[in-house]
Length: 245
Image (cartoon, rainbow, N blue to C red; front, top):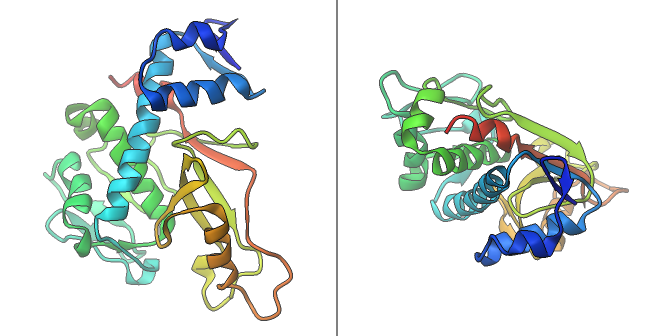
């Protein structure tokens, strides 16, 4: 259900404002879910749709970039733009434009390796850049730091339980019986594209069953529980980000 300025808006009424197929598909899902999606103006809805499309674009680009999967211990980055910290995180160097540094990951992917949660953070930062532009991005994220689920305050991230999955969402596959010798496969964080397509750093763009089969091969001896898609959704707070425009 979509409410704009506290009023429920019907699907037919909304669709008159959109021609893009991806926008129309997401709006149909938004209006058909029982969850309430609240916007003050239609421009807020349009910004969210744009950000969701940019998230999927960034995920596809990262998948093609040549970046490698590794653990925090062995993570590496392009030293021209980033300082690799002892914990495996990447801190932008002084006087480097954040927009240049984050896009270098797509341009020179072979110079980077990191694990899946950092991969998701990179996707969301790139989507933010695409959504608000390089000028604002460089101001807001002057001390950009890439590490696990640690996000800058200007990129607020929300989590909720539910199954109202939407293209551009971050979803999570859990692997409760993971091999303790490979703890990095205890879960896989993914970008959801819709139509049973998910991008996860280290597994690529795959269907849910393929990802579950992959994780099930990373379990301890005599496992009892299969990996599964969690009923949990992670999303940026889109309206806060729009305020930076």
